[in-house]
Length: 281
Image 1 (cartoon, one colour):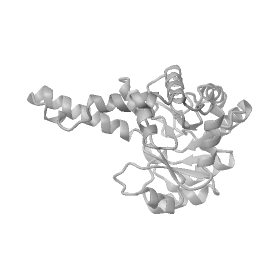
Image 2 (image 1 turned 90 degrees about the vertical axis):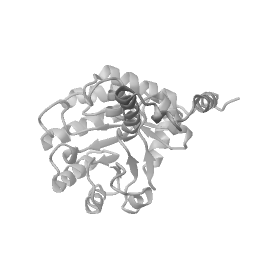
Image 3 (image 1 turned 45 degrees about the vertical axis):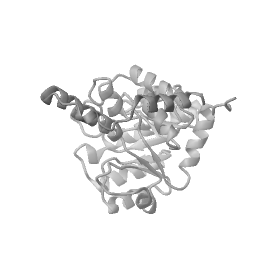
């Protein structure tokens, strides 16, 4: 008889423990199948990907509404026995009060953590002004504390992927967000060792998440030695899958060739994996 599954509270406690020391990889599934496969590989936690899920549903990144996204979080959180972090974009609001309301809704999906960005969605404005960005972080922190949910809170500054690659401003924001109560800090797009070390130093011992896109050449050990606590891959795994699909479909459409089918995982293997996987639920 399968053992009892961990509760939401258990997963949140585990997620906090993971952020206290060491370095772990938190890959980003985009649906239940990819989440369960990553669980089967032994990863300790997972994170959603706004781009991966949006593309799988036929939308550009950032174009989905909050109701659809919350359904996705709830589905993934219920599908696995390890913590799930929600890529909650900009909190689906500009003003702090609505950010707080939406964070409360996000917590209710059963996620173990969530992140808030300092960049508006679908806007030509790259970043919120500093004071506004800080107020949004404070509002999210208050909402989490008020809910008593013990959710791990990640505050992000997006300058390096929004056309504002200023390490001094990035460090300024990360430090302020850490002082405002963020448990984990994240500046996607930074690449150099000097920038990584600067962000680690800025946050006074709180966890740093690093977006590793592979081409940068860093291994888990490299990043651990630089003081990174958490490593994510964003939408890259989803794009790997989409890239293989696109190349195969294009070859069929333009050349009438099916060579790309050679060597792919077979139906029986996937049936066995997901059949065995479901026996634990």
